[in-house]
Length: 320
Ligand code: NAD
Ligand code: KPL
Image 1 (cartoon, rainbow, N blue to C red):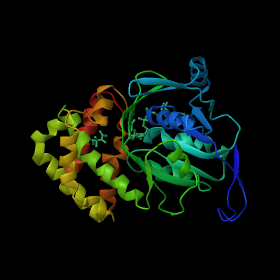
Image 2 (image 1 turned 45 degrees about the vertical axis):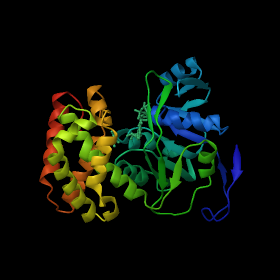
Image 3 (image 1 turned 60 degrees about the vertical axis):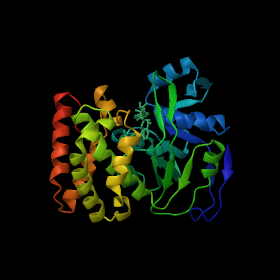
Image 4 (image 1 turned 90 degrees about the vertical axis):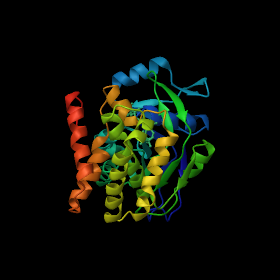
């Protein structure tokens, strides 16, 4: 599938493929892949290695479970070693895998290729972008919810929204129409960093405490002062690092999210509980590194980070 893109795109006339390469057939990658394939878009999954590819081919596709209904989508897959060029890549792995995963694909990226980075937190996006200066990196922030009960199966758990943006280039990508066709709720925003910082702050105020207090999000209502102190420090950080909008009403929103998701376990709680690596380095770790770069002292946030690192290492989980 090939479409001609306008000559003004990057100064020259180029043929850009409209195929969606999706790196990572995990929860969000599979959710995007199935919806795009269902809408008739060309999708190629990029799997870790030949063994995973063989296992995938044996089951014949990805299954999307939505509202209790399961549907199989026979989406073609490949490994990073495939030789076809990549023009559009959805990077749907965890933040700690993104840099290495994209490095393996760098030789296949066409000039002017577009990458959509779905990672939560901050830090991994810049690390990826620095590796592929010949590509356009679009950052995304998602509040959709998906999880896997088995390999090659994804449950669409929580309807949410996707914000996409490119702080370096406001030009709206043509492929946003594909997201409309695939009913992937989204909005293009020049303020994507504000979105990412706001979500990072929410995650920093809620997730580590749910791990340390061993509770659901609602359990934090009993730790109101601790939450409020963290919100005050996070607000200071956001204001100091040029994100005043992300700081607006943070404490009130954290309280609102705690109430609205009272019965849920935070994503970090679930990771720790299931013995999985967390994205702490890109959440609380990033917040503490930026504070230190600005010579800002945030004693409660730093203490929270230290306590969480101790908690993780006591359970044999990585601290990065
Ligand atoms: P996941 O662990 O379910 O999926 C990641 C997949 O990437 C895994 O299948 C893994 O094997 C694969 N992968 C890693 N390195 C790879 C490589 N080099 N080549 C090929 N595949 C590779 O993760 P997820 O839950 O989909 O989360 C992805 C990102 O989206 C995270 O940053 C997460 O915080 C964010 N997010 C997830 C949700 C959700 O509901 N799952 C919601 C919002 C944001
Ligand atoms: O995004 C979340 C998570 O669990 O990762 C919420 C529900 C906002 C809690 O921080």
